[in-house]
Amino acid sequence: MSTIDEFRKEVRAWLEANCPPAMRTPTPEGALIFGGRKLSFQSDDQRLWFERMRDKGWFAPDWPAEYGGGGLSAEQTAVLEAEMRRLHCRPAQINLGIWMLGPVILEFGTEEQKQALLRPMTRGGIRWCQGFSEPNAGSDLASLKTSAVDQGDHFLVNGTKIWTSYGDKSDWMYALVRTDPAAPKHQGISLIVLDMQSPGITVTPIDLISGKSSFCQVFFDNVKVPKSQLIGPLHGGWTLAKALLQHERRAMSKFGEFSLPTHFDLMSLAERYLPPAGTAAPVDMALRARAVAMSMEEHSYTLTVQRMGEEMRARHNVSGLMSIMKLVHSEQEKDKFEILLDLMGHRALGWEGDEFTDQELALTKAWLGSFAQTIAGGSSEVQLNVIAKRVLELPEGKQSK
Image (cartoon, rainbow, N blue to C red; front, top):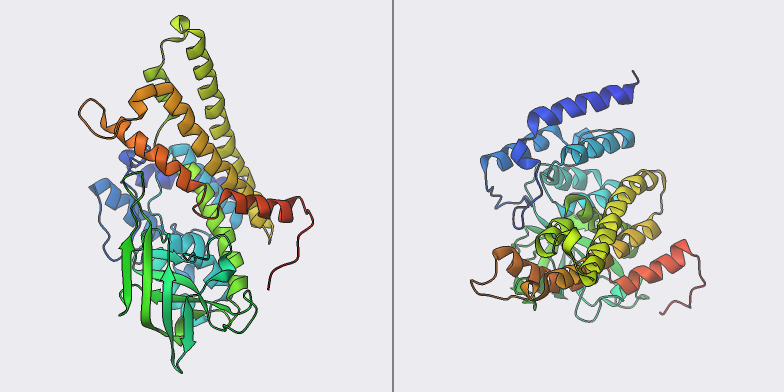
């Protein structure tokens, strides 16, 4: 038996023994664990699964053990992920720090930063949010205005960030700030991390038409950020931002592996709301065919995520692949809800009232929220531009100054 086969056998046995059966079911809405200072659990099984994965170092299985990771190779990590999928294990923790910021710190951070920032991520002790977009700097991220002025031993940060997911629930933020206003816009940006409890930070939730929202606007009023919290070189943040966005797009695409963020099974709902196949009218048969086709697309996407994961580990620049995965998944989710609306008719358009089930009311809001997924993590239009440049290698216009 080869070494990797032996490892697979060990992983399978460990998961069987340590992942409670209740954690091998689809994740209900609102049941995700994000970690953080205010960590809470909905059940003892959820706590147990979190603690066992944390203590094993498998929140970040391919990180070095000295930073709290599992120390696994890329091949071993792929085996772990495959075995978790086989058992339908829920993610024990969702942590944007691990998915996005951590790999950048591993590549660009100092040893002191790695020791101070990475281990709390792998312990589930800090919840992170991202401070990139601004009211006038979304798709054109390099136009950001939030400033960080050098004050000797610290920066003084002023400005605002918008569409900050879970900004009101996060402990720390990683943010792009302008540190040289006189430089060309791509060259005067730096990446910093800051404590969300710092004096001068105000967070305001943003309401959406879906009736619920994770988005916030964050305001900075003379916020002091120690120089030690600058990641990478001063004014060199754009390079780090591009690297981080690659990881963000992969994180967005990973939602499909965990049945996130919609929690609605297309085929089970089709069986519930459509007449039996033998008695269905032609219009119902056409709807069932659309549902089956979309279900096959979802399954194909999940298999592609698994296959492309191996290719990503072998390539340095994977921004094109990340953009493809993010684009396909977000557009696929939107199309899925359009099919669900056609399947369920007026049952999918309830807003309140006892005549609708809780799932039907949740679906209406999730349908409205699906449009936001084509913007979050980089709009579909931005992804198409990246694919044109990085994958198709189409000619590019002159970059603005």
